[in-house]
Image (tube, rainbow, N blue to C red):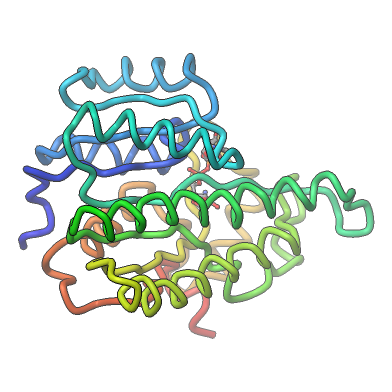
Length: 262
Ligand SMILES: NC(=O)c1ccc[n+]([C@@H]2O[C@H](COP(=O)([O-])OP(=O)(O)OC[C@H]3O[C@@H](n4cnc5c(N)ncnc54)[C@H](O)[C@@H]3O)[C@@H](O)[C@H]2O)c1
């Protein structure tokens, strides 16, 4: 397969300190690529980079809250100056709230919408504009969720405080729609890029494991009988970025062990 050859690739990854962001970035770096990493805390990013042994030839870390359009643009410009090019983009940063919908505050609703939709849009906009201006032929992968396609089943969230919210699902459905929109309209406006998404199912968190009852009930609900391992998200994301996916555009690759199949 060609997808693991990341030589000559410089990939912008948002949410790099998170479990998925760091796992994907590590795979990119291990396969010869470079990463422009963004997240809200410089200290956390440095801790992450140190734990993997990434060096400054491999990664540039930029403290950015993706709700801030000008901060994204500045960090992207810094990355461009540092590496000379940005070839592709993974929009991975995302947040959720877990209180019942009956207690949803306007502030929480706005926060999830601003990070997951507005932030993702302005990251995409910055990269797509660069592709139009430079002629870069790259790809975007947006990280949605299976909860952008189906509702969480409340019966499996008995001992789990992280019962997902309406606003999370709505924004993740929005990410899928934005993916489709730009897979058509970025090309129409002169960007030579492909825009796709992945929709992961529940991922086992090795650092902060979900409740035992939740894991059991989720596994019973999932045709494959388990949650995903973090590493199982790497191949799908890198595949969509790669030349192996050169005719795949506007697609959402569901990686959920079959959870949305019934
Ligand atoms: N973990 C799962 O089971 C699961 C399932 C489906 C989809 N996803 C999606 O995968 C992506 C990564 O999830 P994760 O499990 O690694 O979550 P995580 O919480 O471990 O990581 C998310 C990262 O995004 C960063 N972030 C949050 N707000 C930001 C902002 N305003 N600006 C910049 N960075 C910001 C956080 O600091 C964090 O490092 C998210 O979009 C999430 O919705 C996760």
